[in-house]
Image (cartoon, rainbow, N blue to C red):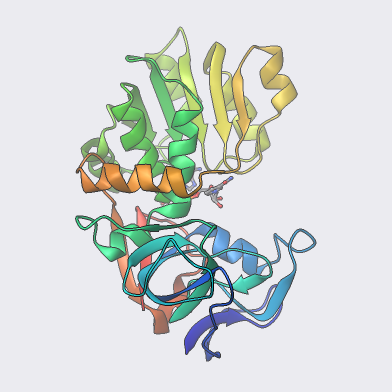
Length: 311
Ligand SMILES: NC(=O)c1ccc[n+]([C@@H]2O[C@H](COP(=O)([O-])OP(=O)(O)OC[C@H]3O[C@@H](n4cnc5c(N)ncnc54)[C@H](OP(=O)(O)O)[C@@H]3O)[C@@H](O)[C@H]2O)c1
């Protein structure tokens, strides 16, 4: 089968032929039709999980994927051949990911059926980015009317976060370069701030002299996040998805949150899919790229919503 692999940590991703995996006991083999691309794929290729999980090489990249159950191993009770499914294809040993024609996952992992109303490509774009956004909003207990600032709002996580924070009743301020401000407004942002047009802290402070309630930061290094945290009122909430938060400093001001690692599982993914099926959450897909060209989009910057590989 065709798959995108790296042959060692730090190598350039390449398209190659790999054996079709077998579904062992308790496992499900999925014929993938679409795979969502995340910044994490490039980080995995560079070895972010080295020492934390065993890896097999050549390592097939890709975490998010959707398709059809092609085979079930002995003992599988929750899925049948032909089910349309979506999930996260990251289980030890790492290296058997979703950028391939087939992948195998334990049925007890993050694998759920796709509601009829949700296209397979949209489902594939959801797991990592959508669950991270949902986890952050779940962890915040936003009260209607509270002000939420999202830094890095125009990419995968941010596109879901804008919608989910808006649905929770927040007044959402999203960072966006000029060309993408309208898209943020359509997703539910009340205001946009162009981070290339001057200091975000100064632009937001001018409109909110008493401070904002929540800061979700998806891109800033620690020193920038520390500065932006000055916008948040004491007792507010700050989350960083890239481990930039100084949690002791946050606690000293009674600020909740901190560094977040998405823990959303099958139940949370089903909840998010239901919101998409009901039309409450849209899945903004920027580009659909054939698997054969997938290596070129791994690690790409300047995302506008999600990029999905068509397999
Ligand atoms: N901890 C976790 O569990 C977890 C889960 C998911 C993701 N993450 C991490 O969270 C980060 C974001 O993920 P993602 O999928 O949303 O990434 P993404 O799709 O690449 O989006 C990042 C967005 O930020 C914008 N941006 C870049 N620099 C900016 C700046 N200084 N100010 C404002 N916006 C800026 C980019 O557009 P422009 O460059 O055009 O402005 C892009 O739209 C990644 O590092 C990812 O690995 C962590």
